[in-house]
Length: 281
Image (tube, rainbow, N blue to C red; front, side, top):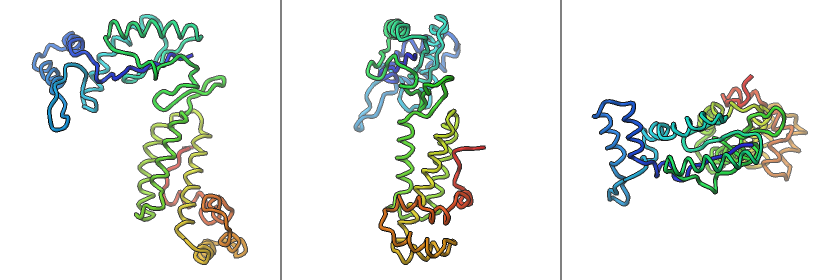
């Protein structure tokens, strides 16, 4: 089971005095400490007016992630002292235990430590004790088989498809080469992060889905039956098959998965366009 912890408005609630005390234990340079204190208390610009900040670190500020880790280092040390198996990134953390009962006990004790010692709050709505396969952490979750494998969380897959749809919208009148370039940038970055999963079959399905989406885009661009027939024939599709496909009343999505479109635009075509693969051999 996993104790999935999320800290409520973490970046807004970091205690300045506790943070500065932690820094002062390791840093002797008073000028640097003064600079950090100035960063924390510089205030925020709201509606053209600067509002003072008495707690928290500027969300999105370049120094905030580092300062946040310094604050939560105390939590890490406490979990290590208790002998827990855990992982934490910024204000999200997972603690792995053997049973639901143990998870509920750990949740209560760690929540008490966070509230009383660190002066922070746990977001009860986003925190839970559950099977790892039912929770997500940084876009990943675990399968329920033995051994458990890292998989891409369903919400991350939904976001992936939404982004691909945006990049391949028919209304984007920017040309094929620009669409491919945008896809190259997004797919490489996405693969660089989620390629860490242990379920390559999901990556293969998404890769196939992207090509399906592009074939559909090409089909829509041809607009009428005469144009579609001519383009299919130009790409070596037999006249009979090209004619039936061009005259079909089916929608672009179904046609894009047809024998004719697969023949006209095989995987090799997309490789030549330098469309990144999600499954790397």
